[in-house]
Length: 234
Image 1 (cartoon, helix red, strand yellow):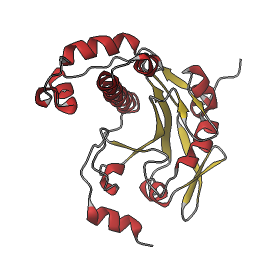
Image 2 (cartoon, rainbow, N blue to C red; image 1 turned 45 degrees about the horizontal axis):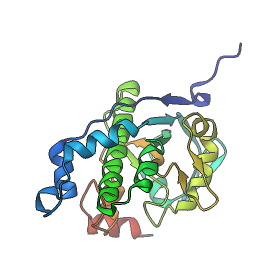
Image 3 (tube, helix red, strand yellow; image 1 turned 45 degrees about the vertical axis):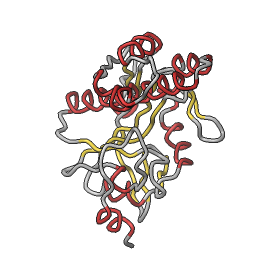
Image 4 (cartoon, helix red, strand yellow; image 1 turned 180 degrees about the vertical axis):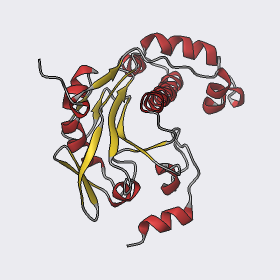
């Protein structure tokens, strides 16, 4: 039997363990500030967690070609000047897809109380971010990388959501294994899914630093005007 190269392998993580701080859930949902609400963070978490099926798929890829504002992985071109700049001095990257399944969104859709529906959706988003953190930790440990940064299609104007096409083409086998599909409108199903490319860096890069939108549960860093201006330069 022919042995697969590392770049041909699809790696999958099933039953990813996720944890949430009750205090953090209370802060994000502002439960202590809401009046006439019987919601309890621990109760919401206990309802959401049984519906979670966190899993991820990733592969190891090497950059084969580079242009002014694009890179090529396994014959697929990814058009982004910021991505190209971020991987300027490296060869290996880690495309990935991660999901927590459709259990929570299905349950939330059946919920008649809009506030409770919002609570469940928000906690599910927090779980998804926690699952991605687990994948990050896994990659660092397995490949002995000190620092990894991430970019996702659609997170920045420079790398639009249409870049999901080459990513899912590259990750086709992995997306099937963890049961995530991409629609013609670039929507991932289940909706509680994330995709992107991890890459090693000497200095942390977080897309949030280039995004001025504040009302985002997934924000991981403050908007950095100087950095934004730097990446906008020709």
